[in-house]
Length: 455
Ligand code: FUB
Image (cartoon, rainbow, N blue to C red; front, side):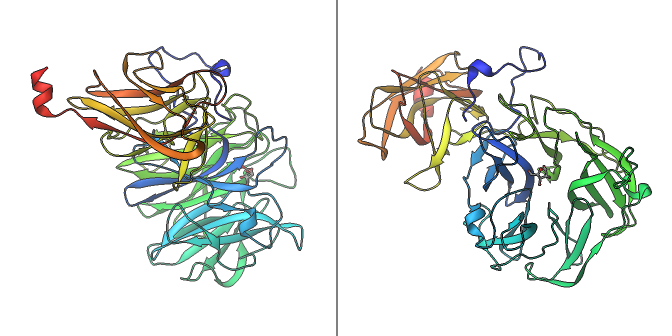
């Protein structure tokens, strides 16, 4: 579902200078964001709402990453329902944590032997997978959902999950087994706020817990009330309470009746991830993940955060003189991604007028040429390089030949002139009708200093 420009009408009018970069993924519908910072990058684990879903049609989980919070690389789906022999459907909200060289992804899905929701755990040596079922059976199964894992400073890990209750259990150091029995956290109105109108659920806690610790204070951020949900939070002096309700993080808004929190610090800033229905065709079942930067108040409380279509500011710039994946995207129109025969993902299903925006590209004193790794069965498509907008200054044009197959790759190069400073780069695809080309990666070559001076 590449975003079709014809439908890209924002619900809110923004200043002409503001460019929409939220939701951060436009190629597919995504939900239930869970960030993990590892080795200088933020990895984002999400669910995937299938196109035209009218209930929770979710079969796989997806991974994205960024080192600047605006250009996001698509790592595809290294985990899906078929990874768990015991699961049938409902690939719902999970979280990945890192421990001792391994990545553990906790996910809820339906246990086909009981028909109830259960929590599984998958493991990988890499944040982008491949992940495999660590156990061959559920880690816990009590019909409840939305696992979050927190590792305290003393090394004790806790798994929390639940809807309608809030459960926790102490995980062992292997992260795939636990000690003792799952316990319920008492849902009191002092701890989780007061819900009116539902005698069975007197507190605001609904689902989607996200637990972490900051400056010695424990936080649980969660989807509150139903439906529509808002995001609320509570704090405690310890990992299991006693909790004190602290109020709203994100009010109800955004066109999806669910929301889901994920919080992380990255490069000195704090970020709040959530989902909404902001893309064309968006709804409570066709959701999209988005991000906002925020600052804690001096007393550690979280300010009210509202959804925006501009998203978080870029942290740093993107280097065009190293290989960049075509599927590293700030915003796009019309394209989709797919697994590439050369590994990773490529961008495909490209038609005349589609484009990819890459934000904050640091050309410095100038580029002299552009190389793209492309494939096509038709030939004749052109990759146009524009600055500032899809119709901005053209600094290069590369023609794409027929390579014989959509996954038979060749590198094409073309001269570049006028690309200097830090710019938003638009890779715009033009040509005839139908699919034109696929792109796996691209890279600019810097003009030599001598050449730059000679000009
Ligand atoms: O995405 C499916 C479910 O919707 C999640 O598990 C809940 O948190 C809600 O977002």
